[in-house]
Image (cartoon, rainbow, N blue to C red; front, side, top):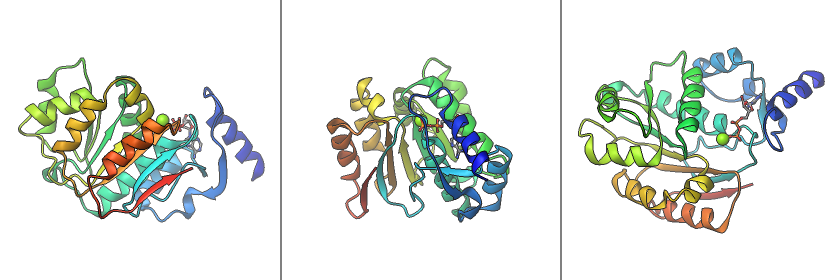
Length: 233
Ligand code: ADP
Ligand code: MG
């Protein structure tokens, strides 16, 4: 009921500046796998936030919505569904990469993905700076279907970890694109784009939609001409 929704809205807003607004739409009305739906129920999420665009179609998207508006689920749920529908197995390697501007965000995002993937068979891990490259390489060799990474370390593995299989990458997600640009990761990102398969979906999320972010999005989208582009919000 309405009361529950208010309570949840408060929870979404908690600790964030501005906060997310829940819609009247329910997760239970989404066409998603039972495996994901069950995990979402256990996480006690009922209503969608307003930042759940339809990413299932494979469009390239630049989504901007304010901090606390639930962007993490907005990109993770479609990414997990994609891996599930394509029946990704460890031997297929990495199908989705999520790039985050900081180590903390990468770990947080990985933890949310881990909860959402509780009932799925697909594998996940994160690679971040300041940790042992070889330990991460030993994980990558096993086949990591969903990989969360910071830009510098991702580039390092793309260059140096020969067992890192990303030939079947379907979707690249760039979270907090504005912060990635602020932290001078633009050149690393360009080097990353050069190495990844072109025939993939690219999704960018950003709290603010600055000119720089829009240019960056257009640059990444420009790598796969045939896809639809969308700038939302
Ligand atoms: P953003 O990335 O847009 O800043 P997050 O994805 O980090 O927002 O979500 C902000 C907070 O809202 C998190 O604590 C998350 O657990 C909570 N949250 C996200 N989506 C929902 C939802 N549909 N219902 C209730 N809480 C949610
Ligand atoms: Mg976020």
